[in-house]
Image 1: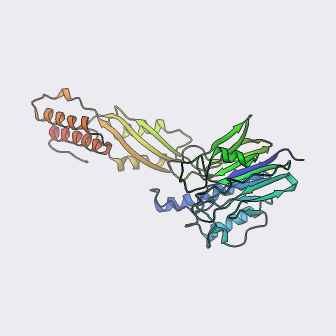
Image 2: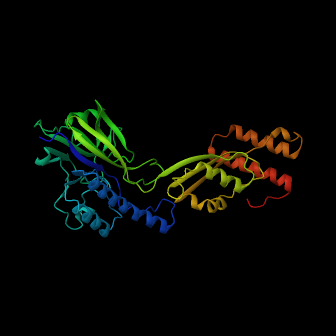
Image 3: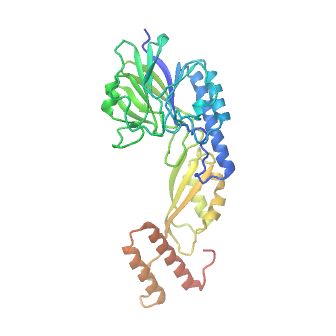
Length: 377
């Protein structure tokens, strides 16, 4: 009897995502959409290279409202070429609704798509049974596995769950508790829905339940490496190897530019902070912080142009503040009264956006006092 089965776990790729709200230019958004399909191809190649015996896709493979029939056809073709079992649990973004992606054409014989009832698929050659459930609608407020338990037949058992682990009451995407997962009695629970990889349950050195996360990150709230799990499922859990497969990453960085005398200085400081491996490849969210000479006005568009080659896409946030010594101005002078008044308002203001406006007014006001005008504001 088989004691170990090699399995690849992945999901939440959201093929077809238009990236319409990403802030990307149109061509860059189209390219990013194509890259999702390219990463799926990398996953299929990894299944073969790593000699995985089954592939588990834990839901939201497609973004149903946007995916094209051509993209779905390519997925079907890639999976057919694997010549090994593939199991899919449709999730809330690719649920089993009429006209959805799973109704586009005929799926290959080696692919099993779970329907809107808990079912079991057995593989005698591996002494393995996989249990799963596919969303029949966009919301699933009840846990269909609540009273479900795998049989004690001596074989290996895996359950596939596209759901919300230990989520607050009222969560509309298959809420399930740790106790409910354990009660199912499976050797391993392959989770989908959350986009960050995380171990949910483990014991005696074996992972018992986990999210592999999204195969490719989709936003700045999905930082770090993304990829798939290569599992060796055995009794009581699984040993896991992480396979980074994503082509790009989202990274958030803070760069202290205190003391910069020019935009050139700022560009140089940013360049020293961004890791070499990330430059030109990743999607960066850079916050500029620190105290600057009030005479240096940040031109965000100019900086974005100067830094355009540092990232696939760059978001730039100005969180600097003017380096102003109020004591440097005579209290009775116009400048001194202006600084004192704005500092008084800054001390009592708690809204961050309003504080930024007051700091900007302080900076520009002093420049106007000094020069009689402000250029390039």
